[in-house]
Image (cartoon, rainbow, N blue to C red; front, side, top):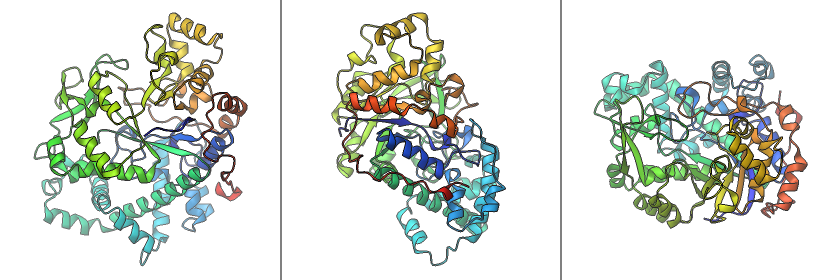
Length: 512
């Protein structure tokens, strides 16, 4: 599927400024949408929205289908009458440029329990409809979370054997024992999806599409693996046998050992790839387009024994390739998919991408180590069917990258843009906006010209990631005229009716 020529911003909801220690789906989210609308940015790209587990990584979620309840806005719960203003104010956490996960989780959990106690689920037709529409995953997920909490968040393969193996007697006992907790988690999902879909609807009405992110792999300690062990490389006790990663690359000399259990693709195929079809179906409800993370893994993936401590001793194994995507396209028809085709890309991966006419990704930060044949330089783009980024969530900020780049790379960029590069991030944004790529997307940090201390993730590490936030002043200080000028000369107004689209309404009572 080809996309309109347009541009936009990459930022995850956790990065929004709020009074609760973590970004959410309330007032600050709508403030950001209004900023996009006013600067004629018609794309908002996000990271995976699932409930986060180890290391708070959105790529290590407790579910491939559920939403992150800690993105629920207490301010919206106040408006719904499920919290009082006083209760919400007592949970305030001083604003910071870092997500304060532990404090946020603790205070918001208490608020959510209060709100749930006031929610009347009896006879609630909207809740019943939500349960019916999400029956494929919701029941398993809520039971999993109730059990996980009862076991101190220890991995499910360490639970008592009957529950770990999902023996009917043990499942029935757990459903009875944790009935109230199950209802609580069901309400959290109900509320998350109500708030998220309302926000998405406002974005769409303002002419903004949302690009979501679907990780190729799921976390071992997830309801997906617990409920469907036959689809994953785990033994009869649930222990991982073969795990995912990538060999040594730009980001790590020893590779990246992700630790996700690999798929048993033959078993998935026997089931008609139903689990994958349901994943795409869920993504199409939650977002308007889908960035397929680690696309090359569908052609061939790096297989490592679970006993290894690095990703160095692995091997490439053939993936499902066209067999999976033919099934997906037969089921859905045309799909708005972007292929994350970075890393060690082979001609087979390119052939798989091009068979379905999927746009790939171009990262401008990668363009300056070779001035001749580097495919990330704008003049070497071989097609406009691609998405150009200054950098992604895995890269340093563009200013940080430039400040640590080699003198030769810095010189090449300066020569290319004919500038002293006093604000290198803005120079890369300008290159992206004027390139032939159908879509240009840049992290919000680059638009703010922020340094390394504001980057989102350090691949191959587990500490101090995913915690960047901005303050209201930081967004207010962005040069809107700079963006509007680039939209104009770069012809990136997608003609989606932005001039007549609804401006995001910001009511004073939206934020306490």
